[in-house]
Length: 224
Ligand code: BEZ
Image (cartoon, rainbow, N blue to C red; front, side, top):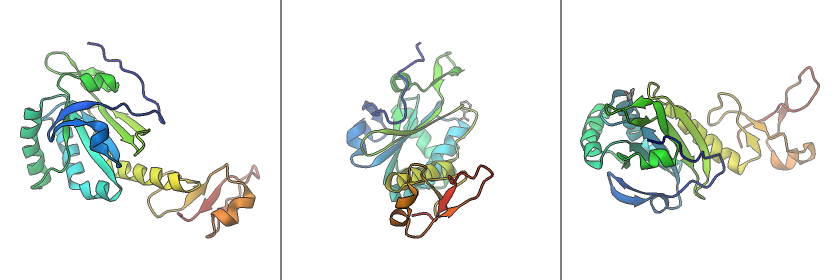
């Protein structure tokens, strides 16, 4: 089986697709509507790390809703298998509802299309499984972030929420977010901002950190 699809770069139009899911057949763009989306993949159903990840997303669903971003998972098994697994996920998460869809990619069609197969991770029949991919897609269907993790490492969903906050903040303001930034903390003024424009753009002021080079590029400002 070919494990190579087209590589997607940040800023590319995310390809539309139709798929069977636990909420029925969907057209991805229609399902997104005017929201952002996060598509995150899993190697297979009834596996321990995946169960913790899907539980975590189910538990923090209001955090995604608050940010106008719809989660959708994908795993290389059938809808019937996903529906059985959801009962385990709900039990593990201590939740009575499971509020987002899981795509059935048992034929690996999307896994190939979106370049998510891990050649080192195979099912019992030796067929490659998907790695833990994350795609964040904005309302204009543009790819804004990708992550690829191996099956052995579960993802950090606090980091994913943090990235979403940074993407949305930096879309609307001439700032970038520094290392380990979290919502509410200081931001960096973009290097492209001219000093003359600072008072208009940053009425709350900026602080320039002195460095040995004497260059004034470390300009910090409260989060706009
Ligand atoms: C897991 O979800 O625990 C898992 C799945 C495939 C390989 C390794 C771990």
